[in-house]
Image (cartoon, rainbow, N blue to C red):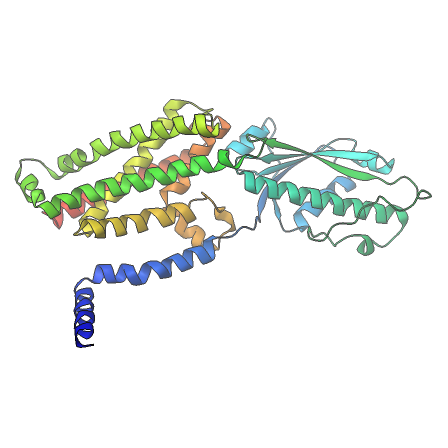
Length: 396
């Protein structure tokens, strides 16, 4: 027992002498619990809904209200004249578009089936399937209301009060003596990913996740390796400035990361059928800005760590968890609590995935995404600037 106590006491003293590792051991589990607990949310709420009401009738307004009152859809202003659904989807102003035809109210009044069109942005297959499920449930609920109104029944007896859950009643099956009942039919159209293949949504996210991880760890480990071997001091004795040193450390890994990007895109094309629909030059600009931010973060991490194991722990914790949980890679950002949404604004992968999915899946260029592009540029400048300050003031 004395030997055991001696070893345990030695390890405790060693941990006290390394507060950084101790902080990581205590902080990472807590951070993971908070991130997973608040960011992991499979509910789909606040779907941006644009409505094109060509009927302008009371019945069409009631249909729109049914969507809004379900609490799953947020009504957006009507699109401007000449603005196409492509513009709404490309600029992420809408996730779904409800198109109501001109004769909607007349068809219902005549007891016939009135068909409305429901367009959905299918870049996120999981969210698109959920949105289609909401629309189908709302259609069933609306049919129940229409049947109750035609039969003179109170609407509360034949509907769910405007909610999606539990709307299983319909106007059919009430007996052959009943008059012909009006029905609502929703005709869905999924854009950009009509087959709702999850790989088309996940592969761009995986590209952003892999590139950030490799960019951060490559530069962080390379600089710390120089420290451990004692060659960093020799490099500093050479007649090179801090900027030249940073560029010399960054550019080789930028080239390597770009080669890795090409290989990943080729694999995505032939293994998962993900085709790049947008301009390659725009894609290259976005990738370079994203990689520069990741490489800058890796250089900054190298100024904090003294060993490669510390660099790996810090680099992975600063790249893996935020990119996986707070970027919209798996879980929609808008479904997270407000605090997590605010934190996600400092995660570069959030902006990169918006651009990447737009170029790869929607075939757009950089024009619809000036905000995300500016955010990537600012992040790269800030991270490289912080790394330069740390190299010039602390490590010199």
